[in-house]
Length: 404
Image 1 (cartoon, rainbow, N blue to C red):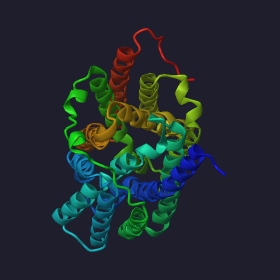
Image 2 (image 1 turned 135 degrees about the vertical axis):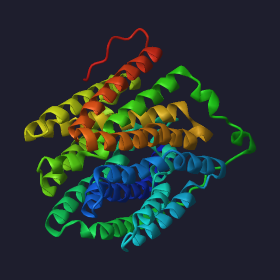
Image 3 (image 1 turned 90 degrees about the vertical axis):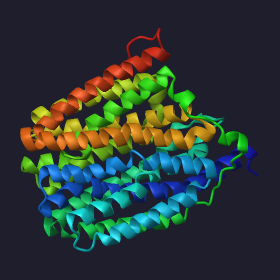
């Protein structure tokens, strides 16, 4: 007969399976939507700046939607029901993309859809936070096992969609959107109907005292500049490769390289994370991002260099993401968890996404797409300096970090 701790672990594992399914389907949707949205818009006849405006709508919704949803989920405890509502509305919006829309109508549909999808991962991760913790501590191994299903979903669709769009054109992009959102919605409705208890005392927990702490401030500064550097990848990478003459199959393959190493990191991260303090990992990840953007700017026409640059995604995204989730969980425990995750999404993805998308669109239109990657390199360097400050605040007597 299993002991009580073993039985509890088995129950938690069974409860994590639906969250793994949500992660897999959500990132399967992202895996084709984000890399190929810009190419679909280009196929519709929009110019570079107009494309950057449309793609920036997603980041703009992250300025308000995640925190609003996070506040609501913290104060009701109904994270799963809110996820079901958000997925259902996003699916309706995806269906509208099947019709011919004016630019204004397209912008509004994307706005509503992104408003409901941009908060899904913060709420999902907040809902499962207690399931990937043991003794109140963040369990990187269990979190990585769940998150790697998202990477697998991304890998499958980024590769298949690239091949599909290469041979059949971009006209089926809306249909891919509908199918992927149907899968997301089904998996969200299969989540266990968990509701966290909310007491009157817990409702009064304020987030501002945490935000005023110096280590938290420098963590968010680091996250801002790090993701701002990633704008070159998230918004312009497919356009950049297309302009250099790469086929959509090659574009999909190069995206796939980054996801393969991402999966490798999530699967093995428990072996590496303990070797450095979390804030030291921020320094390593941002330094790797500086190198990656420099290589992409200078040698994007050399395929093996570009493959190496994409392989750095294991550090620049996967390791950095896990470290950030762990630090958010540390700084914003309990009833602050939903708002902490939402703040991370707003500051690390909303603000830099809007700024990077619009500024990158302006730069690429006037200076060429390569200029975006030099600017991204500069942003990554600022992230490295900020991460160093965050590390020194928490570990003033440690030696300089280096990758294990």
